[in-house]
Length: 137
Image (tube, rainbow, N blue to C red):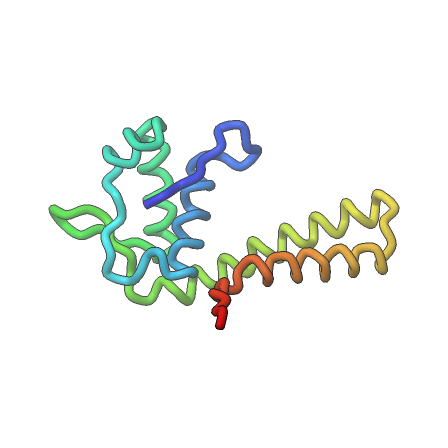
C-alpha cells in the first residue's frame, strides 16, 4: 500500500493516514475483506512512530472502516465503502469551500473562478482518458 505522508503538512500524520485509507477504499485500491499493513510494517515503511499508525488505525476502527481480526491484524470492513465515500465527499467539500473563500477574499471574480474550475476539470479529464494507439494504413 502506498502512502504519501508529509511531515510538514498542517494535517497531523495520523490524520493523513486515516484520509488516505478512506480514499483508497473509495477508489477501490483497498476493498472489503482486505488486510491493511501491520502497524510495525507501516511504521518501518513510512519511518513514522508506531503509535502514530496505531492511532490512525484506532480512528479507522471507530469510524467503522477497519475491524481487528484476532491474530491477523486489521481488515477493511465489507461495508466501509459507503462511509469512506461520504468521508471523501466531506473532505472535498471542505477543501472547495476553503479555496473558494480564499479566492473570493483575494479578489477573484466568480467568472475567473468558473473559468479556472472548468479549465482544471478539462485538464484532469484529458489526463485520465486512456490513450488510443493510432493505426496507420
